[in-house]
Length: 230
Image (cartoon, rainbow, N blue to C red; front, top):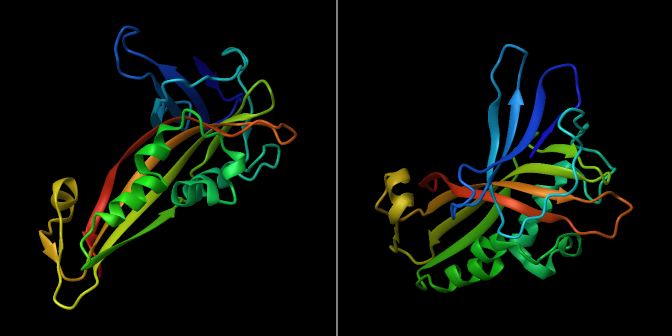
């Protein structure tokens, strides 16, 4: 599968789905590639693993391509530059989010991985001498949207999920472990520890007049920053 941007100028974008081995157990990868000029190689802007039951909508032929939509386009059920913010709110509040009705829940493995239930469980596991706070941020100008045949779009987006663990009692310390410990260089802290998990996302967003839901097609998530709270 390859969906190039329909343009004769640069920069230009291509969304493609690749699989090294059709018999492998690893999921196919959806790549969003950007070429800055005619002499530059395409570079990977997004690399996500597709969900197990991901269904890619009908796309324009590779020889024709499709329009690259503006981040603030109102032709979809939600603007491309607002998709990650809305989804971050769902990961925090689940069905209580004001955006919950816009997104499909079936087949969304990321909600199970880092959603509200996961966050609540992690908070309850902490000792009484510590607390955890969650927040999310969306990097500016990060959304990429290319139109699908039904006037919807494939939207690639970035989301940073931030966990901050701080002591609640005088003299108490917060311990680190694993990748957070390695990246922060801190074993224990009386101030607290902040960790940022960056998530790359691929959505199908239906057209504005549709009753369809925004569908998470794939994601990649990993720790990208950790430090002592200042």
